[in-house]
Image 1 (spheres, helix red, strand yellow):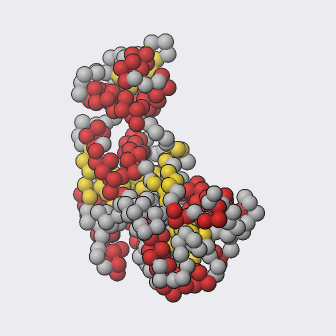
Image 2 (tube, rainbow, N blue to C red):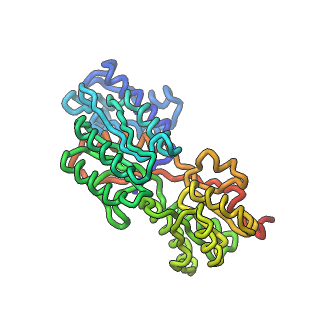
Image 3 (cartoon, helix red, strand yellow):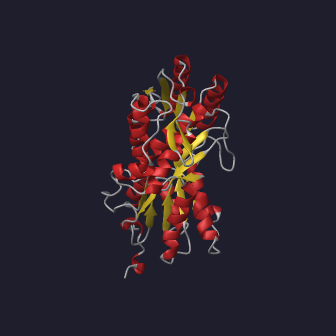
Length: 373
């Protein structure tokens, strides 16, 4: 996986130069300002300027000549084309979730810079029984529109999701549509699809969540998720197992709980196993679990600790503020566009995985009281 940190400054330089080339202000063969001039112009370091120029060079937009400087590449070497492209969004429950909306908003913001139009389809259904069918219909509409690329989040949380994803992927592959996966592959680890993938490092996040409990003296960590969850959940679980294993602690199957967190009987069974430190697949699961726990004698965080993922809006303002991970949504949107444009330029290159690190936000829900000094 390739990681991306805070790169807003170098991306601004990249975008500004690209706009000047597209507008005709900088013409093919024309020399760009020197690195020193760009450093002074943008008030940044020389390595930041070098990153922006390297990216333009890698994309065939400029030529960098040692000892001479950087020049706008000839027309036939530059991308983008004159005609706009059309990219689709195939994302379950877009408009309902909190994570993918800002990612897609950032993709839309970048459409002008990269000369594409972003279109989307109603890929959701109010009834779970028809969600998979609607998802496939949305894919078919994109194929009819002959889109140039698709940003795709595999379907989850419904019984037919895996077969549905396989059918969709087969149609996209047969049509030769470039695909950038967001957040999750449609295949389970360690399998890897032939599509580019943009998301956070879920193994690392799972590791850090378990490590947080272990540093407070915990000797057992449990994991909770809903049936038919995305494969990112397995990556988070694997990260938890790795953190435990490094300390000589096993994570038996009895510590992995699959069910609905709003089901009192399911939560009763979890608590009967002696679970005290719970890592949930996402914030929705964690908040629902804490709500169900309110009907039991155990209290959060005195008796039971909980960690989630995603940092949804209500996580910080829950009755017990939830420890969670914030996904860098804007950055993920930028990476998704970068990968899509690179795929169009180099359709035969191997699939890549681009990742950004999630920020760990420690709040009251995960603090072991005896550890507080």
